[in-house]
Length: 493
Ligand code: C2O
Ligand code: CU
Ligand code: CU
Image (cartoon, rainbow, N blue to C red; front, side, top):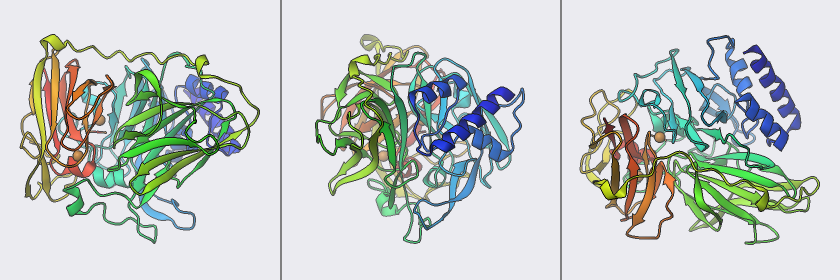
């Protein structure tokens, strides 16, 4: 364990001296070998451990995550007070683990309120799913809770609290989690971008996280758009190299419409979508503009321009035009790589649903009559506006009511997701992945996912095998919707 610790520290020092928050292929492999790596932002796990004074020993976890309040400069010149991170003086660390290898994380609560950690998209046992009351008790100040699991799938995931989420996630507690394939697909670089907004006033300080009027509609957007907690960061990338760019929408509200623009080549940018929501797509396709709603992820393979000093802009498109999320600048000699040299990503071991024998379950997402929310240690918005199957979720309370449906272990189900509202909802299921079947509005790729972006008035069918026993939360990932009624759970027995 000491060796592991020292290697991480050495690794951290080497990273710091590099300055630019990027990994070369060699370092990427080294990071993988350690079983835990460096954050795209340059923050490292070793830093987290050292900052907490944790003594690595036989019993210590792979990582200790200590949510606490920090002051941090999002804008140069202003310090935002009372941001929240996981034991580091900057964005939450990017956690790296390997598919099929055991991992342990200790949550040590440094906040003066209750919290938990949920591992978004990981198909792991219910006991480590991180949902208060349904799967575990609250973790109060200074308490420790150990999460031990073995990730069955590779890909881009993320982690966040499941208590007082609008406040805790709104202030920063959203981190990326990368599960590496056992075999390196052959990229020169791997760069992860954590996309999220903060609601700050002109003075750089937090303003109220939401407006009730907007919570009852599409949700309240932030005022400062960030990537890895920076405004329009720039990253150096290898000329002529193959880049794996991982994007995760960890914002509490925003739906990003992502494109990558080569300043010289325009739409001839060589960017392909290789995975969505951690699962490899059936066939990689050229990125034009692709939407990722709150909670969703996208992995791109990018063949970088051959000359030095070329600029690619990662952008999000909106009605008002495009906004830059990050800029990539080529450096160094031409690596002369080509897409053909990449190994295709192997599909994750998700069971194929038996559609001929599947039971269809309808889930209707609607407005509900406005009521006041129930008091909860995990926070309430004070209202309920939304409902699943006409029942608004009362909040994270000891007796949230019965499940939306009871599923038999090993059986196949079709979830009919019916959006009766004029708003989009990224609908997320814990603990199991589903396959997209069809929609009344558009052609769907047969993607495997944990979060389906439901368009206004859309009815979509998704299918799954109920192969993970327990109570699994099922909710909209627009956190204001989640916290004002658009939540429920299914029970697998
Ligand atoms: Cu990202 Cu209930 O989860
Ligand atoms: Cu989740
Ligand atoms: Cu919603």
